[in-house]
Image (cartoon, rainbow over all chains, first blue to last red; front, side, top):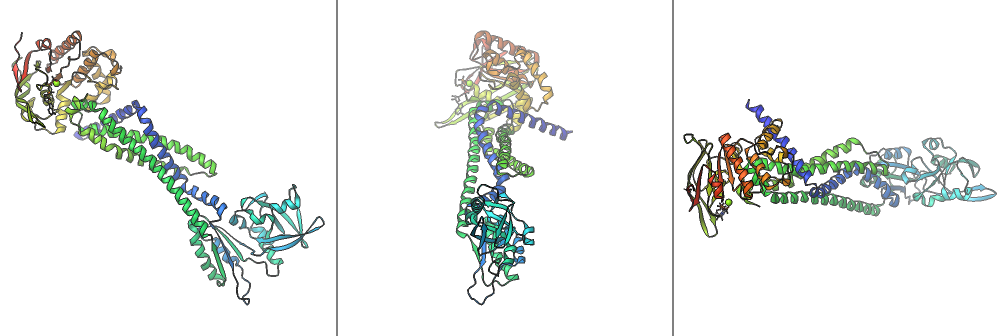
Length: 405
Length: 231
Ligand SMILES: Nc1ncnc2c1ncn2[C@@H]1O[C@H](COP(=O)(O)OP(=O)(O)OP(=O)(O)O)[C@@H](O)[C@H]1O
Ligand SMILES: [Mg+2]
């Protein structure tokens, strides 16, 4: 008999506290607004960064890398004694490196550039040619500006296709579209399937790029797969992958002449820059939340003073310490949790917008998880900042409070 | 009526305040008995300790020594929460002014004592309407408290003090801020309530006219109560 009555009382009390606190906060919405906004902004950025963090890191890697090549490892051979046989990366070595975790793309290509004569409209043009495999594009960040790039099939079959650098294409074809045209190189005819260009193209804008096998088969041994280009997923993977290349190669072929080049300087710069950016983001979020938390604390402290009389009257009508404590605590919670809700809504918009902009689709589950986390965090913030003011209100001497004008 | 048992009984009550200049004795040896249906006035010059006495009787402040019982139960030995429970169940306060929560409406003001007494939500409206009926303010139930006139505010405060059916009403100059007419009207409400519901009431006042309308009157002088001679 006593137990259900007790629970009933607790339910009544909870309902009233919630109702009264929400009402109070809403009536003082003018002074609450700033606090709620500060906490909401902090929460929104927290959720956004948590939800998009991985994606952002990956994208930033890719974008920064286009400028600096910091996540690209280049390997080759330096043969000093003339008696050594010509060195090349075996297909199984390349495949094993491709399979490493943290490797985005690994490509074998020819180190040498072959100057081949091209018969074009009566002229004989010496054109630089290299052989590359199907992963070359991703590994060195090249994109087709026209047509397409050759795939594993063309490379495996050693087909007579080629991709032109944009400058070469312009030189030969002017404003005409070269894709689908044929190019006589030496004594053979090659079909042009695409044109590469963009920021990363560099020297290769003047090159003709042919399938690796096609080039190797037609050469007397000078052109071979003696250059390896490995793009790592993130800069964290670079040292690990760099070290693994040597040991993987050693299991399959002679490692004596291998030389691996990691862009350590660029890598360090990029990593430190990103570290600063991360620090900046973390500090901004922390600062926003601190300002919000301090706002709640300050607002509640002020409320306790300005509402002294109210506290006295409530005690006079029989409110217990816990009633007063619960009410002020609940007001702080109402502030922080309504801020969290606003923040979650804001974060949803932010994540969607950023997702559109970055061309990724952030997972809803991940977002919801982070939203829940930040909701719990806001609740903790409300309790942490509201507890002391609420305790003060609850402890206030009833007579002092009632005499207060 | 005099044969009835006392609702509240105070004996040998003392109160001293510690100050920088030493102990100040405000009350020494206050004896008082309050029975149902009685209205007792306490007068005295400013600073003589009337409010102090009322706060002690209202369980808002501890005395320095003495005995105090409500309905035969000793009050001073109780924990703070038990005292709060007694305030909820047996006591109603009306102060000189600023009795109401300004940002709340009349209904919400009267709801608080019910909230603390854990009265179920569904029962509250009827109780509040009945209390407002007694002071003739049913029509103001949804008014914001700070839109009411001074007299109306005091009447709402009375209604709020009555909402829990207290056995004792404690008024600290409840008519002090009202003009003679409004004050007279409020006194009529008090008399009506005390008579009708056999409540006991203690009124601190500066007004002889108010004291004259009470069952008994005392002057607080030199820390104890002296009976007031009628007329
Ligand atoms: N907390 C306190 N500490 C020290 N002295 C106090 C304290 N509270 C009240 N006093 C003193 O006790 C005396 C009685 O105060 P009290 O408020 O009870 O008087 P009062 O009779 O109600 O006066 P008034 O008619 O002006 O309301 C005053 O002299 C006051 O200064
Ligand atoms: Mg006083």
